[in-house]
Image 1: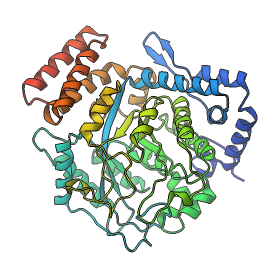
Image 2: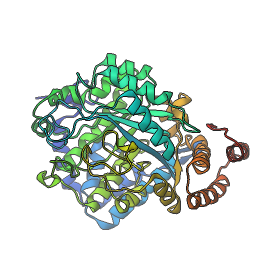
Image 3: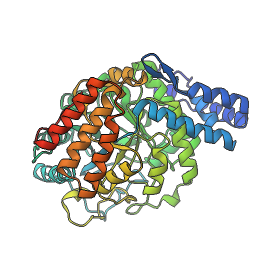
Image 4: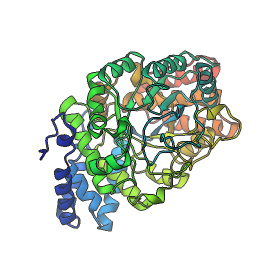
Length: 482
C-alpha cells in the first residue's frame, strides 16, 4: 500500500487515499470541537507585520475540520476570516479574464463533458488562424486583456504545434488600443518537452483541472482515451514545473465525487507543490458540474448546494491564502456575488464556451462545453463589480515584469503585492473606461478611481498613478505599470 509523502513525485503517495480517509474521519470526530476550531481559525487569521501581513495557511487536516464544522457561529467566523485574508492579500481587486475555445475535437471519453469522443451529434470545430484572429479582435473590442485558451485532447487535430501557433497569433493581434497581454493555457496533461515549448511561447499560467482526486471514480469517469491515466494526469504539474512553468492552476469539478474527499485532495496537492517546488498553486478554480449537450448533472451524486459551495470556497481561502481563486460564468450572478466576499479574486466576464462563439451575433449553443449561467456582457459585469465595491482589474503586470512563481508568492505571502497591484488595477480600469465602457460604466468607474487613488499609502506612487491615468484619458498612451 502506498504511504503518504507530500514530497514524493508519485501520485498515489502525495494524493494518498488512506491519508484522505483518515483525514475525513479526524474531521468528523472534531467537527464540533469548539476549542480546536477556534485554534485553527486563529492560525488562519492574517497577522500584521512591519512590512505588510503574513498568513500561515492550514494543513489539509485542519482545513477539513473547518469544512466539516456544523457550529453556526464558527462558520460565520470562517467567512469573516476568509474575507480578511482576501483583502489582506488581494485587496478589493477582482481580475477579469475570458476563455477562448480553440477546438472541441477530443479523443477522450470523459462522461461529464459533451466533447467526449462518443458524442456523434455535436458539431466538431477547430479554429483556423484567421478565425483565431477574428475571435481575439472580438474579445479586444469587449475590452479583454487576459485569455484562458481551451482545447480538447486530440493529438491529430490539436497537436502542441497548433496550440503554439494559436498563442503566437493571439499575441500578434494589435487592434485599435487592444492587446491580449496574458494567455493562460488549459490543455491536457503533456510532456516536459511540450511544457518547455509553452513556456517559451510566453504563456502565463498553465491550468489543469484534476476533475476528481478519487482514483477509482477518476478511472470510471474517464473510461477511454489518454486522460484515463490517473497518475500521468495527476503528476502533470510536476512536469510543468520541470519544464519551467512556475505558475500553475489547480481545480476539481465539484459534483463528480463527494466534496469533502475532493477538498482534502486539492489541499494536499497544494501542499505537495509547496513541499517539492517551493511554490504553491498560482490559482485554484472552483467549477461545479453544469448541464451541457448530452450531459445531465443530476446523474452525478456528488452535487453540492449553494450554502455548501460558499463554505467550501471560504475553507480553500483559509487553507491556501496566497492563491488566486477563480469563479467562472458556470455560476449565476447571485452565487458569484456571495463568493466574491469569501475569497474569489478572479472572474470571467462576457464568456462564450463554444468554439468561434465571440464572432457570432447571437450566442451559439451547439458547441458549448457547458451552459453559461451568467450571460451578462463584460460591461455589465464591470459595472456590477464596481457597484459592489470591487475594482475590476485587467492587470497583467506581474507576469510581464517577471514576478511569477516564487517571486510572486514571496511578495504575495508578505502582503507586498498590494503596493503595485492596487495602482496597476486602477490604471488598467482607466484604459477600459476610455476605450470600451458605456457612459454609465465610465461615470461609475472614474468615481471609483478617484476614491481608490486616495487609498494608495505612498505619496509618490499615488501621484505617478494619478498622472498615468491622466495621460490615459488625454491620449492613446496605454500599458503603464508598476
